Length: 191
Image: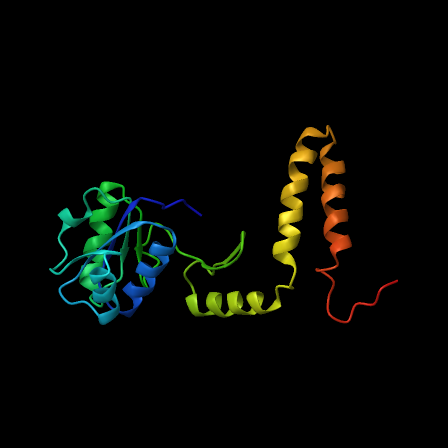
């Protein structure tokens, strides 16, 4: 995971796939620019709300200048390939929708629950499987995880100053996690 807060990111394309990329970037508080001849209504709305910058024109290599990373998500494979090749020449990380071979990075399917972030990746082989696995994991996260995470965070400063060995630290945290009971499997019986 990379911190994109305040970073300039370019999305080439303005259809459904591009919209998902834009929304993910906005969640990360990136500064998003979209370049496309035509934009779907969701992209136009985000531009009208001032959440993104929309440049309605064909992609050109100069559009890459000053960007931290690029998503090539147009409905035109030639445009996506051009964006990928030009980004690579400039050393700008690029993700090409539906073409992991042209991508210099992949985006895992991820979920957030408070401060807990879990990501699932198939290395670009099957984004749909990654998404389904993420949904399955999300539906199986027990309630109380956020509270447990807060408790562990509070204990962490004590543990750092405690002088405990690594094994003792692991045992300390495991004891808290085990006592919480949230990781017990359904159907487990108490001793």
